[in-house]
Length: 281
Image (cartoon, rainbow, N blue to C red):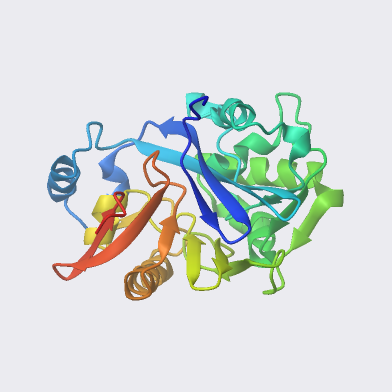
């Protein structure tokens, strides 16, 4: 049997596969609410070799005649990531096969893969789903004006992308995207930051987007925020509630910045939480 280097989990009729887009070269200095030396210790104890780097995952959902992609990575912009398209093909899916793209939010490492080098849609046959508040945020001229230079680029990319997919954009209403996949509003990182609950019977997976960027650090210390949070206080509140729910309900978690394993469970530990990729506890 041919070895497929991707990890998947079956949730009812849906096969969910973690597809790596690669890494972003980053720094623990992006964090606030924790001393850098303490963050380094957590990473070291977790066996993280490059403690500042941030990994990027996207998720492929297949079942019930649907081929759904959750986020699209960086598209290789700024010499970061860019591995999704090749991994998608290696998993047996061409861009034209994708009928739906679900967006957790509009940051470049999540929407960068939606356009090709000429600014054309990569997923020509897909509907693009996102939260109304997310679109409103990126179209807000005042917020764009107040943004840093990096932030202004983010606004430009989000607007170009929404324009390119204008005929295909759909907004979450709170109802299921399709039977068995429910959008979950997780605000703070951005106003319309959204997760996706894939459920069947007593088995449930929460794709939680950017609840954490440094999984071991921000689970152990949920008060640690990252520079990219639009509303750090709201992001912290959402993170604490989501970690608590994941641990309490024994949810299987998928996250855009978990490691290449792509799936994890959450346990209560020492006044915070602990991410486990083993699934054996």
